[in-house]
Image (cartoon, rainbow, N blue to C red; front, side, top):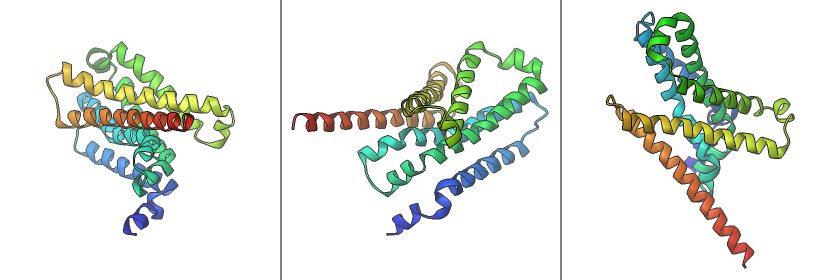
Length: 217
């Protein structure tokens, strides 16, 4: 009963949830900025990483929402699926902070960006990621969704969420295997991303098994 009341509380659903998460992320980013000298380009670079860390859990939650309910149907998984759209939009809003700091770096510290940060491989991944995230955001609202057929919408959102997950997870995989300055959070996000993929794989297997059982009686 208490769980049911908790997950159905107004502030934890719909646009209220989006506002709550976005405000919390914004406060976290602003507080972190107050601790740093933002005139130092190295700290601007650190804020790029910090803003991504604030957004990663939201991506993973959106990624598993439709699969978790297949494996365990309870109030928590129902809440997650019901709010998948708003968690996804919260992720987009959180990633907006990363874009702010990237632009801050590019236009505020172009020499530091060119010599210390720039990597073509990063741009080759980040740019499609931002374009897909923008497309997902636009088509999460009715005017944008009306531009696509139901099949096109599913292809866009399914393909984009896999691309975004793969981009984030492979980044942490690369850090763990090729960098020496590894933080505990890197391990957490690596294994959380792997777990998110495993949940989707298990849900897919369960659904296929059920379909085969129905097909063969």
